[in-house]
Length: 372
Image (cartoon, rainbow, N blue to C red):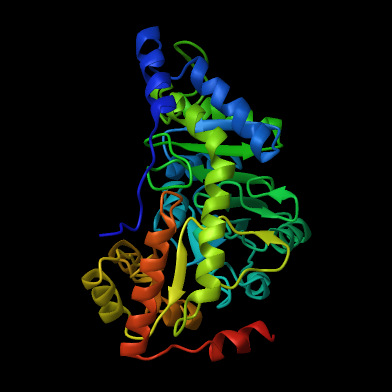
């Protein structure tokens, strides 16, 4: 079976972890600071703050901007639930805006209609490794005096032109094992705003600047030096890993048939955390792939506003037709950099044979959206 993900750990990761364990400095320490410096330099941001997960990075970014009860944050329903949950953690309310059918990211044409006098931030999600339309989001935020918190948890190294994800407002990244780079578990917040970075650092560690002197109510959202050691070995490998993902995706783009392949906005660098196709009879499609030895996964089978905690809060009646449409069609296939060329060929054959059996899904609706 070709798995949907295959985390890669080499001798470099093992050596750095053993060094960290032997140092006796296991909590947030020198390796965390080194990873922060190197990741900030890689992204092109002035500051990076390591956290315990991508979710806590999102939470801290919102808190750092002073968002709390009574506020609203605009985001999307087609995402992992952590995007919206992080808003709830602050006491604010997520306002869900539909996505663009072409690339699964926030439809920028719908944002301004969702802004109220309670809106404090926009949280675009750069999903599957493709940047949201960050220049457009940033321009809207600037016009209305709003903060931008980019959920770039799947977009390590993705870019608009030469500007990487994570450099508009606050960027947040996840280092979960299946991401384009990992620390085992962990996250990172990036920003050019030194004051924001300082507030986030304070909140990350129990509100302490001086040990045992607590200035505010804070959290234990620290990264360990063991996790940072893994990240320090992973980060130099990220560009080559992303290029391998892009090469596999380019082959899929050309050779897959009977499915809708990902549309990439002109001028952006997609890093293919997932290669997500749209298919006919999605659940049957996934089962036939499994029978042919190819793993797949659905990201995500239930949109945020239909999840039980959100239904309990009064969500569920949102008009988000694109989200409803693609939720029933999306299927991610293996694109991780450890795939061999033979495995890529097997994936292509399995998808094409399955599409032949179940019927093709044509890109008519997508072409209509692209023509707006």
